[in-house]
Length: 163
Image (cartoon, rainbow, N blue to C red; front, side, top):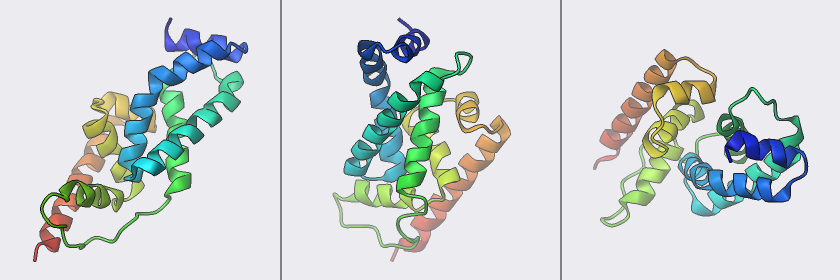
């Protein structure tokens, strides 16, 4: 059954359909939130909150809307509620060898949310520019501009943090 069929059944009160929809979308929602929040525990909490909100709002889902885009819209709001501002200042020194992933997450988290989300959607979720644009409600040129700005800022932050 498609996501649209599952959400329709869930709106009618079918708990199994809602559970299957959550199972289908949970890995990508978690990956998105982990990239946006930079912390596995926060990503798990955010994923739970996302699906609580989905369950509460499923009856208001409009059938002509993309299900995954609708769920990701909720996940975006959850991420913004949990971490509305960058988490760490630029210019931190990189950690010792073996801890680069921690530093990379913090550098990503330090980006403004509008830059962070295009990188997360493009690099972690592997969405193309059209999908990112549709989900974020912007055009593909804006996706390209934000992606370039995010990569430039990350490169500048890395260069400025080298001793």
